[in-house]
Every structure is written in structure tokens, then in C-alpha cells.
Length: 204
Image (cartoon, rainbow, N blue to C red):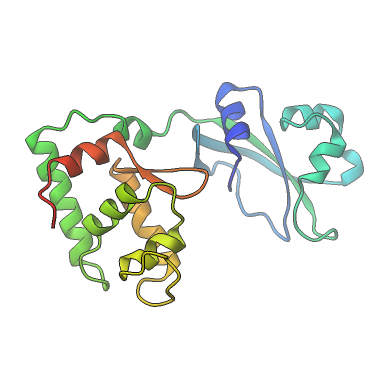
């Protein structure tokens, strides 16, 4: 489940407690947690709601100025059911805290080296970890599609060869889990930790 930055911040602050989605079937379940841009979010009750039963109080709790504004944000087919989802903050995203720590020791770097080596060894696309980090360093804000093209030497990022987009995004998520990258509204950038790590590595 994806939240806008404004809504994620509102959930973290406690004044946004609901979300509404028009889905063919529920995509989250009660008790599920997911990471938003402002921390970890826990899902409460997930229930069906009729359009005419959405109140101004519901709209306010979802961070909208009115029911009309809230309804205008709903995507999907008009006949799809509407789900009301309770949301609550479940604490900060520890990857963000880790990524902000740029005071790397030799032991920290050695552990990152080991983790990246394991990623490379298990990949069907060869050694990708440092190449991906350096691409993100060189092209902050570029999309996954553009960056994966650059992995194959196409700086315009319009190639259809090599690593597919889903695999590339999954790989960048692995780097984010190590605190080395972070997502932008579009594309990625190195975290302070990622920049500090690359600064201590001899270029290929």
C-alpha cells in the first residue's frame, strides 16, 4: 500500500487515521505493517464502505478537506468496492536511521562488503551492487527504468535488454535495507551511509 508523503507524515503525527481505496479485493489485511516515507504503518480494521456512507469526519481522518475531495482521489473502476482502512504509526523506519549514520568503522565496511558480495554471488546478472550504487551516486533522482538501462552502458536508459525493471527495483530495495540508498518521489539517491561507504571504496 502506497501513501503520499503528506499522508504518511500525517499518519506518523497521528492526525491521519484512515485511508480509502477502490479495489477489486482488499490488498492489505488487519495487523499488516508496511513502510511509508515517514515510518512504519500498521493496518487496523479493513472494511467495506458505501460511497454514500463516507462522512466529513471520515474525510478529515483521511487527510482530505471534504468528502468530494476524498472521492476524487479514488482510483479504479467505478463499480469496484471501496475499502476503509484504519492506519496507525508503528514507529520509525529503522532503515532511515541506519542510512543517516555515516560514521562507518572498518568493521562496518567489512560487514557491508560481505553482504554485497553475497548479493552478487547469488545474482544471475553478475556483480551489480557497486555498479548500482555508483549509478545512483552519479544520477540521483533517475528512475529505475533509466538506471537499469545505464547498467548496460546506455546512458539514455532506453534499452530493453539486461536486467528487467522488477529485478532492478528489488535489488535497490536490498541496498536500501542495508541503509545505503533511499527513495525519492522519483528515483533514488545515496544515503549519507551509502556515500560514506563508497568514499572508502576504490573505484572499479
